[in-house]
Image 1 (tube, rainbow, N blue to C red):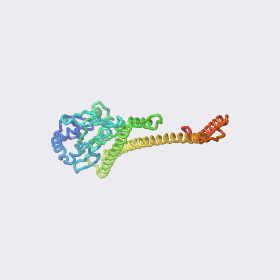
Image 2 (tube, rainbow, N blue to C red; image 1 turned 45 degrees about the vertical axis):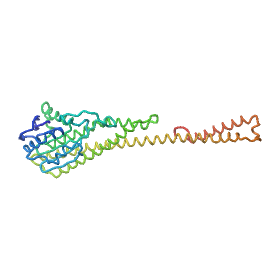
Image 3 (cartoon, one colour; image 1 turned 90 degrees about the horizontal axis):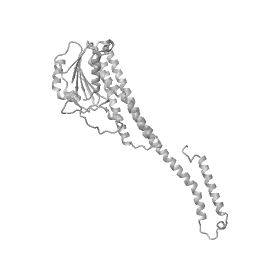
Image 4 (cartoon, rainbow, N blue to C red; image 1 turned 45 degrees about the horizontal axis):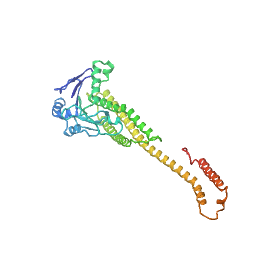
Length: 367
């Protein structure tokens, strides 16, 4: 659990739930999912004190659901954004020790980089002057963003302080943007792994054996594509909701316009991720098709070579079969030069057929 009181000039972290709403700025309350489940009653009471309302039971269930897709919902008192992350990590919690990770190996195939992409949801409950976030247990984005906030005030410049979040929706969008950019940092390694598999698949001198890993990678990329689509739909719903809201004293017109700009920027980042995931998925599918096409071409080359050899030896077998007939009166069998003439004719016929098929490009690797 991490509690922050954020103003344009200061960021103060506390280890206890606040008892009253501060006069300036807003409050950021951050919990791991298991922590929120254990402290649910205390959190609801704190929200009642600070905001005059509590979370709806259905939204509490959504916040605690570790398999919920990205979506946006709202009430007259707050907005709820559930956003599935694409980040490196392992989010399974130790139920006996809230806030700590349950370390165990994952039974998952595919490239190693896909093992590190965790798609657990992050919930944002946005009030006028308070934002409640529920993260996976090992949320590095929350910790890095909190460290950036603290460092920007304690040792930052005036320009750095000016870039601090000015409202709960602004903080939510900044955290979401950082989560999206976290996947963009992983795409190089994932692209490199798939490019390596493509090289192996189309290499005529190598035999590809990682079919199970490739299948797991394709399934994982398809799953990431679905997650990105849900992310884009959730952010689009948020933008549509912003268009119906008029600025208030908590969000002046200038800040409200900047909030819309940041929302569109987050949507553009998500679309970049969608484009990249789809390109990788298409690239993996294309590599498999190219592999089977190459295998088919090699099989055709082998069959064409065997057919040519059969065509060359067919007349030679006919000649040997003809001279192998057991007739008593066979004039050529009693000629002392018949053997040499027959050998010469068979060699000339074989060489002639080879030259003919070579000129027709029926022999050799190039067609």
